Each structure stands twice: as structure tokens, then as C-alpha cells.
Length: 210
Ligand code: SF4
Ligand code: SF4
Image 1: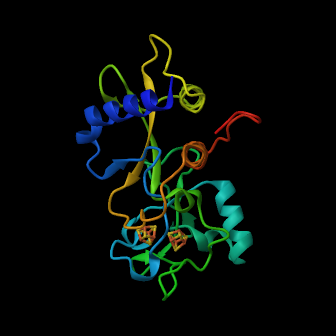
Image 2 (image 1 turned 30 degrees about the vertical axis):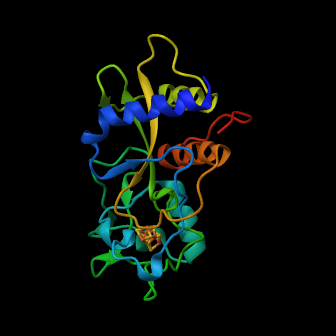
Image 3 (image 1 turned 180 degrees about the vertical axis):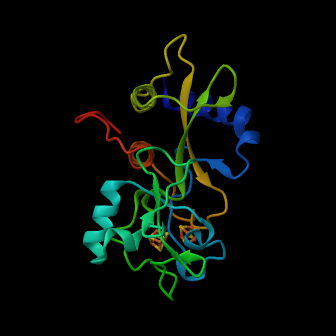
């Protein structure tokens, strides 16, 4: 599918489903890129999100980077890590908070553990959500089906006849950091692939294009 046709198809899909995702905006090639405005940001993400999910691998990474013990990094009760039923099985813990904000948010509103920060922080403000193109509904799909849909998008193809799963790259509308130069197509493709990898915790196959 030609670039323009792919963009038009994604935009038309978004126009059908946008009302279901009022906190988000679609990101297509040519959209402004992200430059964090932390120093003067009124919608500071690290204050707003009360649950930042963490998996075992992220706890180890953050523990190494911070020098803190794993139980100091996650919310605990009676010395045991709390889990949340709304979180995916691969990321059952959530990041510890102090005084209502993330414990790693510095006074200058910058992250004091930037190197070790969780994937959820790395991916923000972007998300890849998947939609049933026939019903116009957001769907939860298996990892293989999602990876196939991402591969199709990155291979410049419309999903084959009968396929109903399509990914859209979205961004959190409240983040004021989308002020950078326009995303080129390659940058956009890389962003789709990296966002998918961070959000769903599974790298694309070696050699497969994001
Ligand atoms: S909301 Fe956006 S601009 Fe503000 S601190 Fe978070 S990432 Fe940066
Ligand atoms: S770990 Fe850093 S980036 Fe993530 S919520 Fe905390 S302060 Fe923000």
C-alpha cells in the first residue's frame, strides 16, 4: 500500500474509533515529535499516574541502577509486594510512591533514576492500541496476533482480507511535549515498533523491521 493510502486508512480508522479513546490523539507520519517539557509541565505524568506497572526484569534493572532493594522500589503491605488485578501478569507490581508522587521524582521535576526507569515511563506519552477494524472496537489480542499486525503495518501492507486487527499509534493528549520537528516516516515506524516492544514487553524478531 502506498504511503498516502496507508496514512489515509489509519486516519479513517481513527475517525471511527476516536470517540472511544477521549484521552488520546492519533500519531501519524508528519506529527510533531516528542520533546519533554518537564521543567514547566502542568500535567506532569510522574504525578498523575498513580500506578506505574513493573515486572521482575524492570525491578532488577531499577534495583541495579538505584542501589535500592527490590522491596524498596514497589508498593508493599506488611513487607510483601502489592499486586493489582488490572495489571498484566508480566507486570504485576507497581512503583512505590511518596507523598502521592513517584518516589523518584526530583524536586526539579526530573526523574532521578532515568537510567533504570520502568518501561511504562520510557514509552510515555505514546501507546499502541489494537482495534477490530470491522466492529470499530479496541480489542485485547494475543501477543502473536499483535506482533503480526505490527509487522503488517511496518511492512507497509494493509491487513490481509479477513484480518480485523489493526494497530494505531496514539499519544496521551494531556502531555504538552509534542512540540518537536515532524516525524519522518522512518522515525514513525521506529516509534511504532519501539512503543509496541516497551508496552507489551516482547521485542520484534531479529531482523524484522520496526
Ligand atoms: S507530561 Fe509530557 S511534557 Fe510533561 S513531564 Fe510528562 S512527558 Fe514531559
Ligand atoms: S521512575 Fe522516573 S519517569 Fe517514572 S514515574 Fe518515577 S520519576 Fe517519573
